[in-house]
Image (cartoon, rainbow, N blue to C red; front, side, top):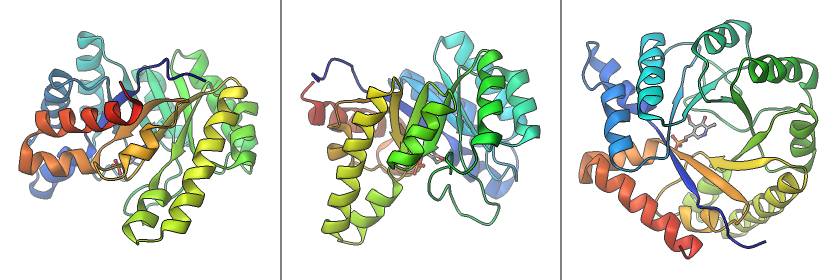
Length: 253
Ligand code: PXP
């Protein structure tokens, strides 16, 4: 397949809220961060409304929805597949919803959703949110069983978990990184052949984005922690611009 599609960059602004919440109060405002990210060329804004509200709040989510609607930029709401989140999402009607596994004690999302094991839970939620007008994606490992299960659930999009690949590279485990990269490449091909749109995210940095972005079936990367962290040194606009340059270089765009 040729690289016909431009790879979109969704910027996850959760950790602007993490910094705000470290002190309470209103500064820095993640919605102002989303506005700056849009001005810097983000194709979409992603935010995770966690059950413990450790970063993004309900009010942030509402303001993000208003901002993205007025800027005509897709908002991707990440959330656990649980009833109270489904109710909030149905009220907000974000452009996209990414269902993720969530454990209270985890520091960040660890691993993909077990869609194969949770078909009877996930499937009706996908239908409900889709009927309500959102485009649902399932955050999963690049594993054949999970990809087939995601397609069987009726989700139009999967987001492949790239965190394990990032960790393997950080650990200097080239062999493991290569195995995971191969699985992601094959998974993206399989997903596309099943009619799914393929996204990827988690743990992506300037150093590891190249091989991921080069997977031709990918349509979107969602990147948060690294961009927000790097923005401290180089500014948000430059961090987003540099990530975009890395993505375009990898694609030969
Ligand atoms: N994609 C999903 C589904 C996530 O849960 C997260 C983390 O919230 C990301 C992408 C972004 O990961 P990171 O902050 O490591 O870039």
